[in-house]
Image (cartoon, rainbow over all chains, first blue to last red; front, top):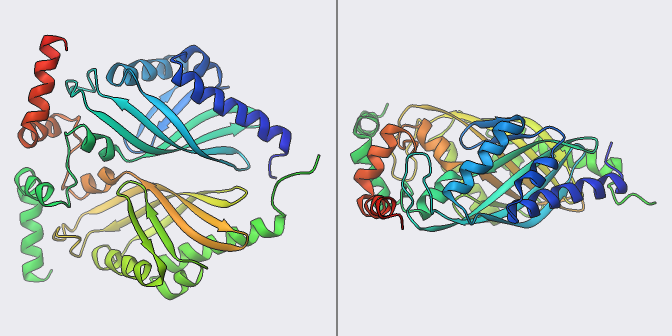
Length: 171
Length: 174
């Protein structure tokens, strides 16, 4: 059953308020857009479930990237989800995991699946490429570029060595 | 109020086309997969790669078939919208052939991704894919998670300037 126009409008308003309140840094408002607060980050396998974990996630990500903001590019209404293509931009001004701030800016395309049960937002599941951020922060290279390949040989001698042997002996 | 949604028939036909597309890829029947496109086109958001037209799309499939001949895509969830079918899925395979200068590692990988199959009416005109390139490279053993201890050591060795400047900034508070 496809959602009717009224349900679409309600869901879209929730998603837009969710993203706008993040840009305003009003995370209490962002939290309030969830019927059940939950994030799933596909790239890293992270799950943040419940108000406390989600609030901690907002705090941690804005410690690393205090100016992080989103721009909505496209919005797709499906039966039980609103799927959003967006770009996230920010500057690495605080600690990220154990990494000291690099002061570099990044731009990251994402696809967020806002999962709904009726009118209630119950999860935001995000697909993105973590390497895209790390490359722009200067802490990772494309492993298939020339410098990346050299780094790969240095950092992963066994894997590459075994692969070369396998290639030479044809197995 | 009139519904701006698709007729049930069109939605069902689009979903069947996507199931046929994935099934053909899984069977290695790339002519059949190509035939599901009215205009063949792939866009990989992570790497800015675009394959446009039959020749480029076919060459792209062949490159992956050589590197990962046993790759299978499992559909987890199909979302139907006005002008697209969005597919959450996971690709699994083994790296048994050369891939862009990387010799085969013999390792298995599991890669979750989402694909946006864009439609113009009945016609499939592009597949745009969001995936995490690191997930695959880590599984193949040619990248570390930069936030793990091993990854941090590797990052320090590979990127001394970026990390050195960051440490100085951390100490001086600027």
